[in-house]
Length: 90
Image (cartoon, rainbow, N blue to C red; front, side, top):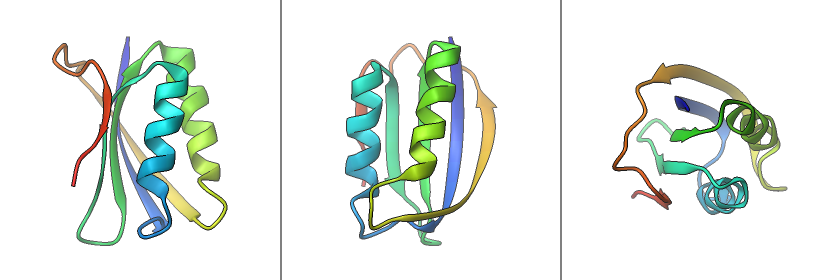
């Protein structure tokens, strides 16, 4: 099990990025959450099988068509048993 916290910068708010992230995470069977940050970025906590998480992050870099991801900061986290689904936090 790999758990990561990811900070995403760029044009990622108001462009459907959180919904895209949730759909993508659900398609991979991952758990965690996504939320907007006050600085205009997006924060993601994701956990699951190591290879699946890394593939998810590669696809997340693409984002939805209208978004523009300019960078990601990735930090390793401790997995959380209470995170069973992937949700959008506000």
